[in-house]
Structures are given as C-alpha cells and as structure tokens.
Image (cartoon, rainbow, N blue to C red; front, side, top):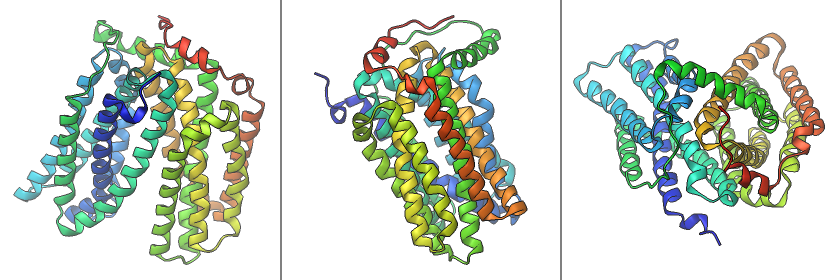
Length: 413
C-alpha cells in the first residue's frame, strides 16, 4: 500500500517550497505596476513590467521544455529560485541606492518570467516521479490549491507591504525564494534519462515535442479543451470586471468579487481529489463544460457585486476538477523523457490563449458592450461543450491501469 500523500517527504518539500515562492511572486506581480508608476509617473509604462514577465515566459517556453528534458531537473529548479531571488535583490539594492529606473524593473521582471518558464516544466516533469501513479491526481489538485492560496495571500500582502515601504515586497520575495532554494536542496529526485545532444539539435527536439503532443489523440483533445476554456473564460472575466465598473460597483465590491473567485478556486482544488474519484474522466470534464455553459449567461442579469462574486466562486469551484483530471492523464500518458517538452507546449498554448482572451474581450466590450460579449463568450463555451460531449477521444479515455502502464513506455524518437 502506498504511503499517504501527506506523508510523502519529497512531495511535501516541493509543495512547501513552491507555496512560499508563489506567495512572493504574486506579491511582486501586484506591486510591479505600482513601482513603475512611482519611478516613472507613467501610467502607460505601468503594465510594461508585468508584460515583460509574461512575454519572457511565452518566448522561452518551448526551448525551456526541451532543455528540461536534457538537464537535471532539480538543478534547474534550484537555479530558477536563485535567479528570482537575485532579481528581487537587485531591485532592493537599486531602491536603496536610489538608482532604480524602468529598464532595470523590466529586466528584473523578464528574469522572473524566464525562471518561471524553466521551473514549471521541471516541476511538472518531476511530479510523477515523486508520487505513485494513483496519487498523481491528488498531487495535481494539491498544487492547484497551492497556486490559488499563493495568489490570494500574495496579492493581499503585496499591497500592504508596498504601503509600508517600496522595497519591502521585494525583500519578502527574496527571502521566500531563498527559503524555497534551501528546501529544494533536500529534495530527492529519481534519476532521469537525459539527452547529451548538442544545442544545434534543440530546434528539432522542440519540433519533436510539438509533433508528439499533436499525435496523441487523448492529449490533443484535452489540450483543445484547456485552450478553449482559457480563452473564453479569461475574456469573460475581464468583461465582468469592466461591466461591474460600468454598473457603478465600488472598488471594494470589485475587490470582493475577485477574492470570492479565488476562494472558489481554492475550495474547488481541495474538493477535486474526491470529485475525480467519484466521477469518470469523461464526466469530470464535460460536466464542467455543461455547468459553465449554464452559469456564464447568468452574469447578464446580476447587478449586485456580492452576487456576482458568488457566481464567479461557483464557476471557479468547478474548474479544478476538470483541470486535475486533464493534467493527471496528460502527465501519466507522457513518457518521462518527453515531459518537459509536453509541459512547455501546454504552458505556451494555454498562456497564449489566456493572454489573448482579455485582449479580445476588452476590444469587444468597446465595440459591442458587456452584455453582448458575455453572451458571445457563452456561445463559445457552448460550442466547446458540444464538441466535448461528442468527442470520441474524451468518451474513450483510458482507465487507470492503462495510465500506469503508459509510464513504462519509452519515448518515440
């Protein structure tokens, strides 16, 4: 019988290290635009730092995945934590010397994004080697809960810390990354199969990863689900915020809405292991799609911020069950030598969709109005729901034994 996940030493180290790291990253992310405003006084430049971080993650994503499959994954995670600590320390030092400028902030943000581009596929690729196959779904859900918890607490603390001193959030971020670095030193990771090919073969390896993802019908179907939902839901979310402002809701009510969304996601992540055991993979995915199709149009008739927060919390509660199922099956179906590239492909596709959603949603609100865009998002999700319901790949999802057997299959070169 397997050791309970809560007693798994190495998973506990990885979870705790990243819980600390994500609090620091979320705190810094929320204050970076404020810091740019203080330093430059330019509202136009305030989003540049956050944009630099996101752009670095997207640009480095595919090469990072290929390199994660070549290099030692624990070493990569350690270097990423050290890099983020140094980026935060450089801002603290520049503030202390009163020499901080916009190029420095943008460069530090880009380093943070670059480190996350490498860390995430390294962690995802390591996870199935730290826990038994039957516990991967619980570990994935635990990581999702960690993400929601880090975002909620980091976002709340970042503003408070920045009000005390401009450098304070970055000092906290530096300390938390150093804590994570120290904890990861004690992580025991099984030996991995590593390529010794030259850097000239990096591009073919990236292409191999893309072809492998496209060639797997189960992964291809679930990837389409994630990309579609990321696009339409992020568009829906930004429209809800704009609509709330247009309807005269106070900033406090909008803040409560955002917090309720995060709390709903956290509770959903905690419930996901139980729900994934009770539901078949097909039902856990299409059930969420059906629920989203029914819930999103309700936003049209809600004019109270707290009721809107409850609606967002309900939507956010459902998502982790589908995400846990999809991510678990994808990780277990992917051979270990390919997991870094697979994870990076999914991060780039999902991140691109999540970035495009708010941009498209914002433009459409200007052109057509909030109510029409909500209905448009609902229609998009409804089409995805119909496709998911009819998908032969989703209906024929493999059973647990097939997943466990898949871990022993060699990668196709």
